[in-house]
Image (cartoon, rainbow, N blue to C red; front, top):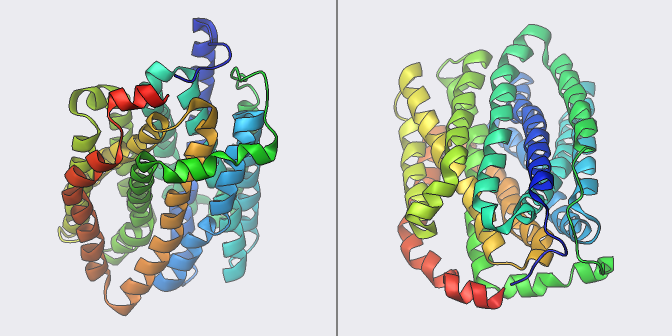
Length: 404
């Protein structure tokens, strides 16, 4: 089994975990603000659903290649430097959003935020998976929960801030918050690495091996569905809530309930994984999420019913969002962990690019209700296939131990 050069002692491990949770909490407040503000701002400016889809998707265009670069840098030089870049580009994107509502300016701003999101997930998942291999599902689950608790604050505040101080000032507040997170991320401790560092080009060498690993296909498929689950809250749910008469405040509240559900999942994910196993988690999550997508579009404007369904949606999304990096960690070597997270991140990024653009056009060509049905059926079909697909792709524990 591949090992770190020097294991962290308990005190250092506690510091690394605590600081990572803190950095994730701060970053996700900012991201929670952005994920609701961007579609609300575009709708406020009068853009239609097809244009909204393009704006939302633009954050993923350059992020695909950037994930691989971030993974290579993380494997060679450490994750912290990439995390600083992630916070910095979030600051820049927020400032550009505050500058203008022009269509191409919005795309530029969303592109900078895409740089941030692409690099953030790659390096935090890599860092978390290397702190203590035996605790990887637990640590990844709790970093998800700490981040989602930050997202609760950002998501809930977004609509109310937009009304109270205006969109431009809210984006300036987002930039200020990201600056605070940037300063805080400087305190993350460096994790032990192998004594002999490879050159940057050699850091890219694991890509062909990862691309041939069947288990990484499973991690990629799971990342694509988890990413689509996030996209639907922006491209389907927010326009739906506006259509049924929800204010910006109610919309951000409904979106916040999703994050609260994800927090709950992250706190107990390690125990869930140990009890039920990956195949059952993937099957249940995909199927139920599809049914929830369809149901949310059919229940009307009752805040209590919508709130309960959105909470359930968040619980399921939390399971999907943690499962794919766990699979990627289990199916990759530790010294290639940054690149493994970047590889699965490409699947995430493709969904961020393709799904909002595709479903935005579909909503304009047909109806928002039809688009909900198409998205729901996509998830249900994925869930029905999981009992076949997952065992066919992932290694058994004994096989995995032999390879590692």
